[in-house]
Length: 229
Image (cartoon, rainbow, N blue to C red; front, side, top):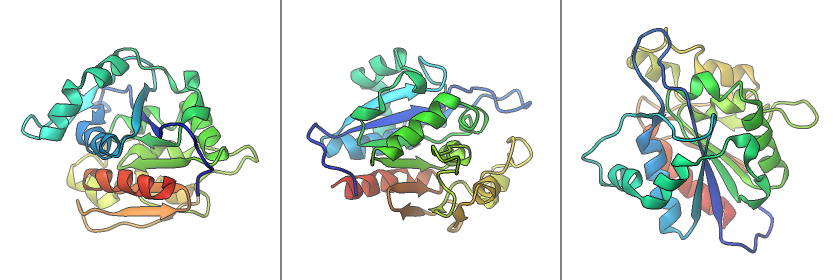
């Protein structure tokens, strides 16, 4: 359980800054629904949502659905727009003010989440102070390299999920991404599980919450609410 926090609950969303899908010439970024759906869950519960991006400033988008009311609301929200314009890097974030950190997915994360030292450090600082670490879809890419002060990987021995190899092959990007996330999570010591393609699947191991795919994003946020109380 999280320690007793006296301030208004606050979650930090971290988004990718990577906008190129390997050598395909196609664009990528964060998956809009994976930010928008949890944003609605958190804000409906009265939480503050803060935003950071790996390189700072605006984040490249992927998969925006103009017919989805929640996604439209996220993109048109003045506070979120302001935050994205001036988003800090993870290294410039104060971990002490957050009840949770949420790693938003999208294929872009596969290129910049694992190698960002500031993000790795932030995740572990949030974890060490007793807050919740959550991630969805490709967001758990950051967890494959996040090391605790004793040198161990944060997910070693913990139950996790993330975008499955089956799903990666279904979108024909298994030969494009720099690694297969499910394999790397297991290699990092995670006890990986998955549901059928595109089905909601959320795993909580103590204060670590992971979701398999976009369909799991809102449920990841709800699980964070449940854990923080």
